[in-house]
Amino acid sequence: SQTIHQWPATLVQPVGSPLSLECTVEGTSNPNLYWYRQAAGRGLQLLFYSVGIGQISSEVPQNLSASRPQDRQFILSSKKLLLSDSGFYLCASRGDTEAFFGQGTRLTVV
Amino acid sequence: DQQVKQNSPSLSVQEGRISILNCDYTNSMFDYFLWYKKYPAEGPTFLISISSIKDKNEDGRFTVFLNKSAKHLSLHIVPSQPGDSAVYFCAASAASSGSARQLTFGSGTQLTVLP
Image (cartoon, rainbow over the protein chains, first blue to last red):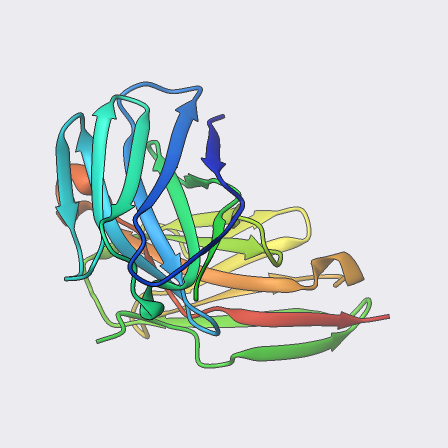
């Protein structure tokens, strides 16, 4: 099965600061990769997905961006964080059936 | 527009009894359904799935039922154990999404199994 490495586990950032969350995948090649956000008391909202290197699709308009510089690397970024960017961010990789998730990053924007 | 809905935000069950978690969907193109379990501050872990060509799938204490005509699925856990206490997410995907194969998640149900 796949293993998703995601870091950091927790992050506290001031409003207006940049963001970079990194995700790497082991155990597969050419996976579909996803960034989800879970806001407090809410479900998992799909932010971005990528079907290959350099291919990014955005599901919702927002203050964030994503990049896929390598086959098994997916990065979530922001140039200037907003308070509303606080949440629990999850990277996922999907094979033929189920998706595998990383441990998540708790981002608090203060 | 929520395409996957879990209308019960929480559920409490006595240890040893059956837990039934429900999920409804609106997109008739969904053809694959999954249940995930999530502990606080961790990523979701896959539990069980079902394809739209089946109406039941069983794995140990976990059984998922699919009623396509009602666009409804449920997860049964029997017997429930305290370690089952977690948030359970229902998810769905459609072959029509092509290579993207996105999963659409419900809002989750917090299951608490009381000893």
